[in-house]
Length: 104
Image (tube, rainbow, N blue to C red):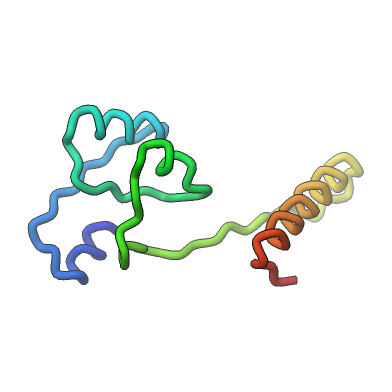
């Protein structure tokens, strides 16, 4: 996704490297070594970016995404699984309501 994005933006002299593992450790490594001018990363809450003093570049969103919670019908017949699923959905709904970003 990174190379496609940079090509579309006319950034032709960009080199990409990959670093598997924990994002927090990657950012710390790149920062300490001075080897990255910019980082492409999946962002959830933004905590790791804030902790490493990284700022989103205006117009730098490469992709919007979402996640989907799925379960098998069979597993949802179990009370313990159904209870925890309801708990997860209630917490997610409360969080989205607090952000003003809910679609029911």
